[in-house]
Image 1: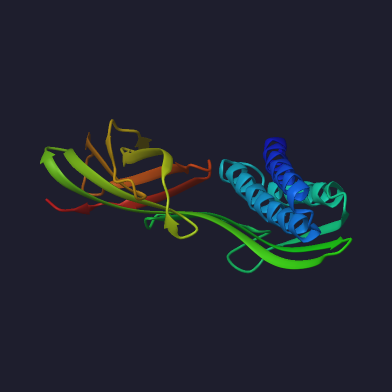
Image 2: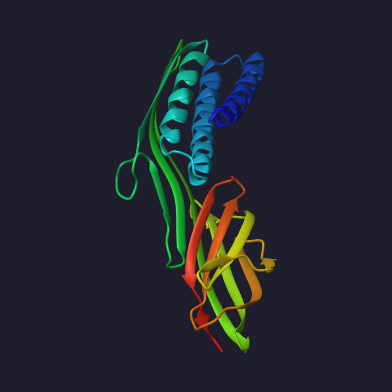
Length: 237
C-alpha cells in the first residue's frame, strides 16, 4: 500500500515541477491549475492500478479504499495556490463490490478489475475547476486449448492466450501454464510464442490419462496485475 502511494506522489511531484517551470515562462494561473488537474487524474489512475495489483495477488479488497483515502488526503494538502478537494465513490454496481471485480472461471475467461468515480474541485485565485471523472482498470484474459494424442497417454497440447488492458491488447510480464492430471495441477516444460500483440501460443507435451485435458493460465501483465483462467482443451486428433 505504501509503495503505491509513494510512486503516485513521485508522479504528482514531477507534474508539479513541470507546471512550476511552465509558470516561470507563461505566468498564467490557468495553465498551472490545468496541469495540476492532469496530475491528479494520472495519480488517481495509478493508485487504482497499484491497488488492483495488490488485491489480485491476494491482498484485501479494502486496499483500494484505503489507498484512495490516502491519495485524496495528500491531494487536499498539496496545492499552494488554492484549495483542492478530491472525493471518490467506489463502484457497487454488479458485478463490482466496493470497486473490485475478480472472476477467474473455468470457461476460458478471467478478469481482474477495479472501478471508481471521482469528484475533484479546485478553487484557484483566478480559476475554478469542477471535474467528474471515472477510472476503470481492467486486465482480462481469454484462453482456448486443443490437443492431439501422440502415443499412449502422451498428448501434444496447444493453448492460445489473449491478454488485454481496458479492452486493448496488452503484453504479459509472466505466463505460467498448468495442466490437470491424476488429481494435481502440474507445470510442464513449455514453449511460449509471443506474437507481440497480446496473443501467445503455449505448446507442451505431457502424459495425461483419459480424454479430458484441463489447463490453467496464470498471467501477470506489465502492471503486475494478476489474472487467471481455466479451460478444457478440444481433442483434434
